[in-house]
Structure formats: C-alpha cells, structure tokens
Image (cartoon, rainbow, N blue to C red; front, side, top):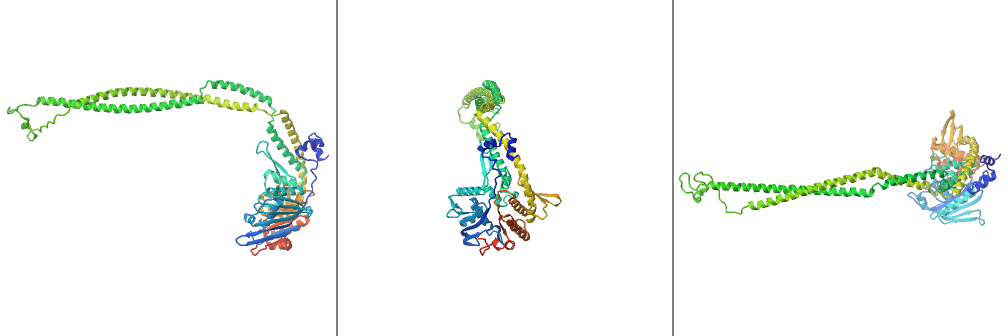
Length: 622
C-alpha cells in the first residue's frame, strides 16, 4: 500500500477523491516525492567604485573567478573587506543588501556583476547599486534571456522567481491572524538563502536566520525533502485560511440555544425597563443636586453677611446709647452742682462775685481750682438721641432679616440633603439597572445577529473537518518519513563532525525541530545551543554537508560561511578545518566559500589558487 493509499484509507476517501478535494487548495500529494537537486555555483564576483576612507582612497576594482571546491577570502587583519565581498554577492542573489554591506561600502560602489550557474546553466546579474537598476541574463548570448529591473522591488522579485524556479524550492507557507480573515505569508528564496549563506545572527539556530513561523524546522524538512512535508505545510495553510473564513461566516451550531437565550434577555429587559421608568432621571437628579447645593451655598453666604451686618449695627447702637447715657448723667450732675453754688461767703457773708473768685482760678474760701465756664455750645444730647433711635430701628429690621436668612438656609439644606439622598439611591439601584440594560442589549444583539448563509457556513465547516482529517494523516506520514530521513543524516554526522574538529564525538542526532545533540564519551549529551561558538560553526557546516549527502534533497550545494576564524579557533584548528572543508567539498561535490583572518594558513591548507588575499598596500581585499 502506497503512502497516499494509506492516507486515503485513514480519511475514508479514495486517492482520486483526495486529489480532487485538495486541488482548490493547491495541495499535491501525488508529486510529493519528485524532488531533484540543482547545483548552484558562484563563478565570478566583480564590482568597482571609488573608495573614500581614512587609510585609503581612490578608485577600486575587484574581480575574481571561483571554481568548485573550497575558496578562502583571507587577510592578516580584520576590517579589510572580506565580509563585504561575499555580502555584495549575496546582495546580487537576493536583490537587496543586508547589514553586512556597510553604509560606507554602499556609497563607494558604482557597478556590481555576479556570475554563476544553476545546473550548469549560466546566469549573470549586473546592476547599479546606487539605483537598483540592472538586468538578469540567463544563458549564453545571443540566445540568452534577459530580465530587466528598474527598482529594488523588481530586483527582489526577479531574483526570487529565478532561483525558486530553477532550484525548485517550494514556497513555505504560513498564516497570520493579524486581521479578520487573516493574512497569508509565504517564505521563499530569501528564507532558503539563510541556510546557504551562514551567519551567526541567531547564534542558537542550527539552520536559518529566524524562528518566525517555525522556519528552521520547515527549512530542514524542505532541504532534505522529507516526504509529505510540503503537503503538510500547505494543508496547514489551507486549514488556517478556512478557519479564518469560518470565523467571518460566524458558524454557530447552537442556534436553538441562542434563540432561547434571546427570549430570556428580552424578558429581563422588560422588567428592568419598567424599574428604570419609575426611577428619577439621573441627569435631572444630578442637576437638582447641583442647584440645591448652589442655593444652599448662596443662602449660607447671605446669612453670614447678615450676621456680620447685624453685629456691626448693634455694636454702633450700643456705643451711641452708652454715649447718650453718659451725656445725660453729666448734664444732670451739672444742674445739681449749679443749684448748690453759694451766693455769699459763709465766713463773711459778703456777696460772691465770680470775677473776684477767678483770681488765679482758685476759690479764696476752699482754694480749689475753679473750672472755666466754656462759651455756650449746642446741646449734643438731642442729635445723639435721634441717632440711637434710628440705630435701634435698624437693629430690629436686621434681626428680622437674620431670622429669614436662617430659615432660608435651613430650607435649602433640607432640599440639598433630599436631592443628594435621591442621587445616592439612584447610583445604588437605578444606574446599575441602566448598566445592566446596556449589557443585556449588547448580548441580545450578539445572539440575534445575522450569521449569514447557513448552508455556506455548514459547507465550510464540513470542509474544515475534512482538511484537518487529511492533515492529521499526512502529518503522521511526514513524521514517519522524517524519522527515516533523519536517521540517514544521523549516520553521517559523527564522521563529518570528527573531520571538522569534534574528535571525541561518538554520536549525533538531528532533532525534528532542527536542533542537534552531540554525544560524547560516557553518554554525555550536549545540545547545539550549549556548544561553544567554534563548535557551533563546525556543527552547522557538518549538518549542511550531511544534508547534501543523503540520496535526495533540495540543498543546491553552495555553502558560504563568514568570519570562520572568529569562532574560538587557533591556527591549528583553522588549518585543520580548512583542510577538512577542502576534502569534504571535493568528496561531496559542493562549493564552499569562507572568510577569515589568517592568509598564510589558508594558502598552506588550500593552495594559493584557492585563496583571495589583500590587493592594496593598506592590506584591504579591495
């Protein structure tokens, strides 16, 4: 029984029915195993421009042709342009630069040409890096096909279509639920290129440059051509898309339950609305609280002002009355004293004359000082009596006003307390009713909304169930085939790791999630993320070479590794590694490009014809 027949039996369909059902979703189970490897080689990198740097300025021209096997771009110091050379080549292959092409280098460049072959078919990419304009030439003139591009978007699209088609690298689908209906996302040539062009941007990743959409695992399955991997990922995309459609249709099998709940809500709403109708209007009640409070504050102020005025007038009245009483007493005393004044001297009976008594202002009898009788003045008692009477009248009137103000204040205080109590009761009960009414109205709208065409919804629901059933069967088949394919890789890895410096490695296991475990003596197991930087670099190389060694697969056999000697390697390690890469490249028929510091080591390990060195007096590659 074939795998397709096994899948068909598990989902109770015939192979023909499965193929017809999956056709609208672009899922093909029949041609899943028809995979071919298409070798990709870089043959020439050429670029020119004008350099402007602190230690070297002027025109430059880099031009180097590459052969199969291992080629090293090396210098005796850092920051000499080694990374820039392969980054410029990568720029051409992907249609846009990445961070490895510095801003200074971008300003210097004026023309770039990268030539290569796919299945021995020549191609040439020529472009102006300042404008992203240029052309892709496929084949040998005059029969060559030419595709021109006039901006970066067209450049990226041209490269993606060419390499994905020629290398037969299927798009890796994913789905984002970032909006209603979702968004389909495909990962193509650029994602695959991250496993050809190796960097340490994600130092804990064995393959690829990002963990987004589980890409390392998917890239591994695609590159080693695990049967049914492509179909499984396409089915996952179809399921996500159908689930998004189902959400838009709002498929709801509980229509009867929704109708029952709607009736309950309507009854609750009627009762609450009756209660709300008998409840004071919250806005009017709030306004009443504000109005009574304002009136209470105003009457309180008026009472305070009346009290102060009453106290002031009463004080003036009391002062005037006191002064009047004093004047009246003084006047009465004067009359008594005048009546008692003698007309004759009691000693000599001689008539007393005031002029004679006034000598030196002393009485000649009693010797007391005689007061000087002032000139007759107006009587002050009369006007003061009138003022006292007027003030007394004012006091009486103010006292009446004070009583009225006190009464008003008490009345407004009572009105304010009543309004506040009403509002408090409203908040405690009435407003909660209004809130509950609003909530129930929202729920009612939800349970009674139009759920669209029920027949269409049921069709999508059935379609989704069938897709999931097929996906389960296909994924089961993929996992079984992955175990077989990974076991083949596991058998190759220990030898490759030993050649690349893992002298004590006894076993290696490639994990389904694109991880790696290395087993040392005494069954000591170390995962990839726990390896040193140098070990990670060598483990990546060993893994990719093992992927190229299996019977079938999609990896195009080009490996580019930047800054290899920066990974905790001494000169001996680097020399041995370069020698091993040379042997592996020759044995497995792959092309390897590496950059590192250590020109003489590279020449000794690879031969001078396989090493690109400095071309300027300052020690720069270009």
